[in-house]
Image: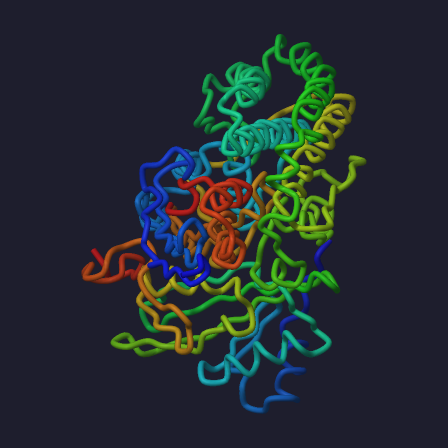
Length: 145
Length: 370
């Protein structure tokens, strides 16, 4: 059974290594600030947490902000944690790409870009995946009608 | 002038979207140098129906038939992953008998899905439809069994939040028992025809190799991941439902080539037969559905529920705002993510190998495009 790591405990470990990166945390999730996302993700992958597998990447539109959700799993140690980051800019939302760490993020980030309109800086091939170029808007946003 | 000095022009070939070997409406923009693949760009979206957006306007119960339209060759497991996530979110228990029924239909679905995956792979190797028809013969029996359960052969809509829609009719039990007894000998028959075949070996051994590290790094899942030597199966490693009660092995490949993917699927079918046989022994009597309200209002929160579907990890990420419809409905598509490495697998191989490698990934476009 995959052990769900205690979010607050992981948040403490992250704060020790990368001070000021954790925005908030609860039992299951760690929310980090957008500009330090890549550093935190790299820490979780290379440290003793050994999060070698990105199970799922998605985004949610809460109208005040976009939340990008990473479900990380360690196949080696069989535990998991949910990492999140928030983007408050609705005009040009952007966050660092994690493709250099996990190739599995490639198509999933393109999907988020296409349907939610969040740009991933550093993505090798960021273009629309399902809809065509010139499609107006991003359908999964809550204000898209 | 020597032959080696001949300059060849690369040219672009569109494979699909309407091509029998793309298993639906999938398009690959292939750059070829002669017959050798230089570059592949997968193009998605021809079957994009906006299911994730659609689901935000429908109630939790109304969304169950939508999940049938995702991976339409394994609708039962799609239903299962979704209702499992809603049950987790809303805290609804499932009766024992329903859990057993779910395991039985889930594993039968795996057999049916792997039969098609293997059959079409052999089809693409050039054995035009004869082996596939053998596999359709057994798949037909599974579909007949599902027909008894829910009256449908493709889009079952059988699972409900808190159980399954109906108990199985009395004639289901002897039929499924007979099928599970016969199935291993059919698998022997396929293996006799395929596994040692010289042409199959020549075309699949060492072709389209996915290394262990790349498989993990690219979030591959299912038989596609295990063929690369990663011993990871959610049924055992993140056990759900009642899988911890059954004895079964997890077939793992070594080379990560097309042959190992084929072999993993064949072995998994045998293991699925074992699981169904054990479930048939242990199934208790009782209710098959917890009375849950038709309009479910889960508490505010979120859940990521995942199961080991035939094609890999199928997950649902649901966010609830305590209304009757999900605030966010995201599907983790196993086959879309498995295609991340398509370029790495195919470059340098011939166009005919590209078709075989793509076939070994075993994709369903309904789930990729959603």
